[in-house]
Image (cartoon, rainbow, N blue to C red; front, side):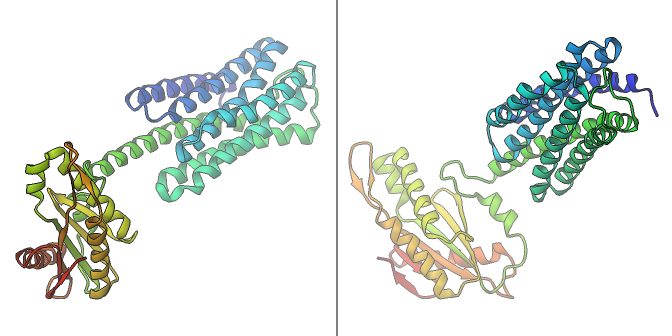
Length: 382
């Protein structure tokens, strides 16, 4: 077994480096507030290691009490950071509700000479917090199977090592020790803590960067004007075969250029956003609502018949036609939309081919007077 003192020093140095690195990452991405919580929690753990090391050299009850106080507080902070990361919950209530009662009750027991009792409680509470943190990450492993699964495993192993330390003291009835406990469980705990916390730090940063990259990727898929998906998102989601119960509905706002010319581009932007709201409110949750660009929008809907696809398009068009827009000069007006519908089949195996057919149907709708939905036969909306 490696020298325990050397491992304790390595643990403290590793923890400080991890905290510093995590805070540097937070400086780059201030939106990841959980990194601050995590770093502060690790600093508390480092403080425990430092106080415990000096306690082992001096047997000072004050240092032992400080070490006893800091370990569970750090573990509680790590649990609070996990909830902050996954559920965006403030860490303050969790820390206050769990840490304050512990600090009020347990460190004084250590200071009164019942250090063994305090250490049993310290180790079991720390174990519980690490296992709870493991369970929190494990329960959300579907978001990032390998990273969250591995992180949960490391937290569980570290928690188990603290549970072993508490169990040995409990079984041996060491209620008053007067010095740091020394047994096989403590040796295992030090080794697992060094390796486990190093891995936990690396995986925590990996998860944060993965989430940040995902945020940028999702932002690249959103049309900033309307909040709908954009063409890139459409192509990414529908790059495969286009089945016969899958439809494309291509919308084009009628006389949109005149809206810009008469009322200004700012009012035109409001019209685009108004259509996007009508689009989202009347399409199904499983339908893809996309702005292609300009005044063109597209919906991809699956598992529908031609009549069902038409009804969805009619709802969208009718809702949009009911909206009253107001220009900057106080003028009120309403707009309409035309649409073309096309379905996939064996002859049209991909999205682009089906969209081309929908575009031809849309052309017919606009040629024949606009405010129509065309799927081979025109139909007046409203």
